[in-house]
Amino acid sequence: MHKNSRIYVAGHRGMVGSAITRCLHNKGYHNVITRTSSELDLRNQAAVADFFAEEKPDYVFLAAAKVGGIWANNIYRADFLYDNLLIEANIIHSAYRHQVDKLLFLGSSCIYPKLAPQPLKEEYLLSGYLEPTNEPYAIAKIAGIKLCEAYRSQYGCNFISAMPTNLYGPNDNYDLQGSHVLPALIRKFHEAKIENQPFVEVWGTGSPRREFLHADDLADACVFLMETYNDEAFVNIGTGEDVTIRALAELVKETVGYEGELRWNTDKPDGTPRKLMDVSRLHQLGWQHRIELTEGIAATYQDFLRNQEAYV
Ligand code: GDP
Figure 1 (cartoon, rainbow, N blue to C red):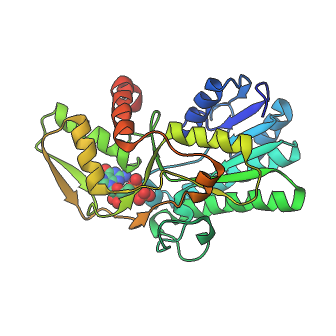
Figure 2: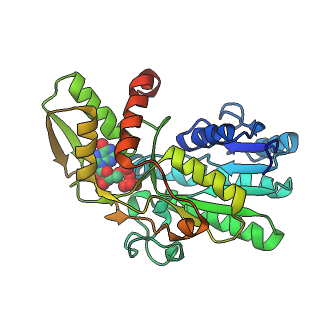
């Protein structure tokens, strides 16, 4: 990738796409192409084809997706499957038709079977049943990986895939129903502190374990893979360390400075018991995360305080 290559970041307003765009600018790539969803509906095949014909990107980061936490994934099952399949199929096919030099597709750790051995190695894909709460999203992400593999084998396209673990950082979704756990906890503890509420409701039992990676680390890993990695096999991106939801809640509570109680609502689902990434492939390639969880949560809380009006 050259500093003046034409680089399309799909999903540049989201947490991942905005982090990739920042990272590219910081590294001196000055020809980054973006479109908002109102300018280009990625579910529209003809519109995506026209966009590629007009802009002719050399590199594509496919970070556009319909995303959400455990509740949204479970309720909007049709939307998560349909929107994501269309976004991936349209972009990947257009990238092939318009001879994009390289494309990086972003998946998710939820592609792995619910009861796969831990840590999750790349080869466990399709070795068992998926977690039901996010099965539609996972099926769409698995289809994206398979599209990249198929266009590589049939047409010789240099399309690679990366599977990030749970992410957090600037431009996250802070909607309490639709969001993931970390932004939800930041917002709940912050509001409870301001309003002097005696307790905060937290979902599930607190015993599931999750791994968290800061979006800026993810972006750095994506640019690293785009610059250096050209194989079919997809690559996990994570820290290789996880915490219980209970420990995470305590950490966010402390960061925010809330002094009340935690109340666990076990009517809400726990989801998959654990999804810790095996990151040895990524480490062997020469990349490691830099932002530790405590430091990352502190920075994310400061970002939340600065942008609260836009976020909530
Ligand atoms: P998942 O990783 O796909 O399960 O997605 P989430 O980030 O939404 O949830 C992770 C875990 O955090 C689950 O066990 C949830 O039940 C738990 N959790 C605890 N409190 C909350 C909350 O306020 N919002 C969300 N989304 N999850 C919560």
